[in-house]
Amino acid sequence: MEQEKFLSEEKYQETNKKVNNTSKILLTIGIILLVVGVIITITGFVNFNKTRNNMMNSFNNSASNLFDSFNNSINNDDDGEEFVNSMKESATSVTDSSKDSFTSVGLYALGGFVSSAGFVLLIIGGVMAYMAHRREITAYTTQQTMPIKKETINDITPTVADAAGTIAKSVSQGFEEGKKETDDTLNKVD
Image (cartoon, rainbow, N blue to C red; front, side, top):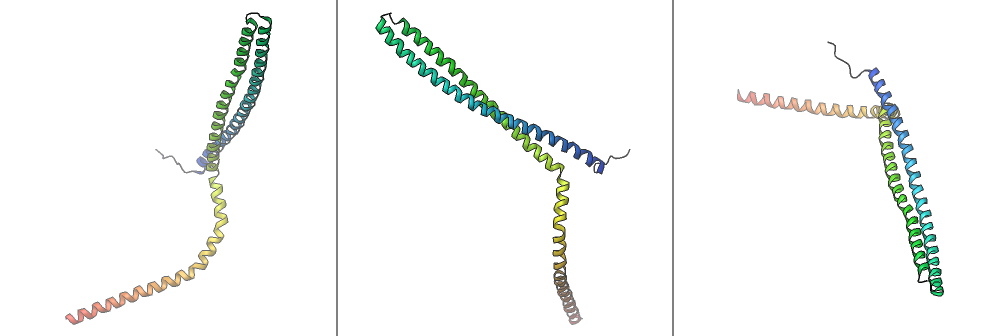
């Protein structure tokens, strides 16, 4: 049974293509989600401002209608029926206009979630794109730094060779002196 090669150029190209395609898909989806999330959040802000303005207008109109109906009920002596009806209308109109403000909160939450998901997908897609092109990046870096490294090695080599030669001479001289001392000691003992 033949053992399968894991480090072949064909396998590399095949895997690299898959990683590259996946990173492009994730980047595209991430950008789309980020843009959609920002649009939803902006819509929430705009909707909230419109709702606030409508609610304030409704409240102001209700307050003036309430005041007018109170004056009319005092002047007409209708037992306050017009005033009570005006109160019911004002409460209903303010309540109806405040319901829209809760949809704005939902839009904020949805926009934040979608934007966050898009941002995470952008990060993952970016890392995968880097991984897919790491070979090219490393080759480029090597091509840029290799002439400098060669020049440095050529400049340092004579100095290092001289230092290594000096060290080797000192070591061999130390061995010779040690051998000489050992021979002298052996001669004295005999």
